[in-house]
Amino acid sequence: AQKITQTQPGMFVQEKEAVTLDCTYDTSDQSYGLFWYKQPSSGEMIFLIYQGSYDEQNATEGRYSLNFQKARKSANLVISASQLGDSAMYFCAMRENSGNQFYFGTGTSLTVIP
Amino acid sequence: EAQVTQNPRYLITVTGKKLTVTCSQNMNHEYMSWYRQDPGLGLRQIYYSMNVEVTDKGDVPEGYKVSRKEKRNFPLILESPSPNQTSLYFCASSFSQGGSTDTQYFGPGTRLTVL
Image (cartoon, each protein chain N blue to C red):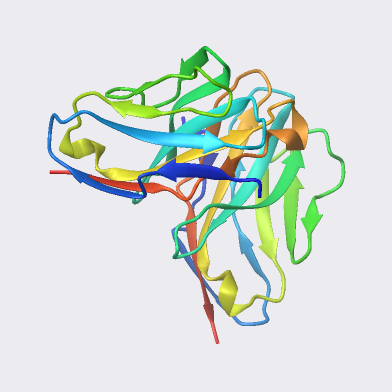
């Protein structure tokens, strides 16, 4: 079974609107970390936001927030007030504290329309 | 400047010709890792290392070797590259002490083509 599932290969959003990128995960661990990364067309991987499984509040970093629903095993990324520079590939990732591997999803390509 | 460096950035080679992609970090991170990125498959972990002389397989280790003789360096070795190893490769590192310290920082990537 896939550890990380991103079901939206591509998304479009109007500039200044909010957008939600979906991520579900599969683990039997109680302790784990969830991460979102951005990959612009230039190729580098940029860390956006982290959520720990024991964190009771949703993580926020500027315009990025993580909608963490533990019972549903989902960790959706919300980008508010989209900008043209948000057009990129977005990856969800997880590390289980019982192991040392990182698992990435297949990514969502976001296009912001002027 | 804190960074992860990889060399070379681009490499075109032929089947069977041994190559090494270097990776170095200057953040004193314990954890280092190699990934390959292929269209539609996301990033897949090849090997990782928890510290010097400690390495372990990720999801796609076949055809690759690694070593960790020094904390800052983690080279990826392809002893006999094949065309199915054509990919974009990333090195990453982190402190790996749990929680947000597990956040990995990535190198710029190495685009490898095996003819």
